[in-house]
Length: 91
Image (tube, rainbow, N blue to C red; front, side, top):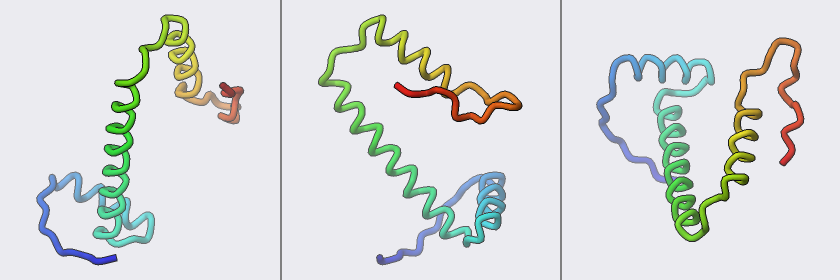
């Protein structure tokens, strides 16, 4: 892997948060920011790919959309005290 030196400008608060996160993970700020940029680029590529797929399929029926909405409500709700968080999230 080749490395390149770059100069970036980011808000002071963002840099402070990045430094704290890097410290918690035992990484340099450079390595932490590099990993964060790599992850962001992968997410962006995935979103672009998903848009391409969605452009080729029919939109969900109201019933299918209702199922997805209910499922997402279930899996994204905060875990209450005493719950394991595992729940029954099978599709």
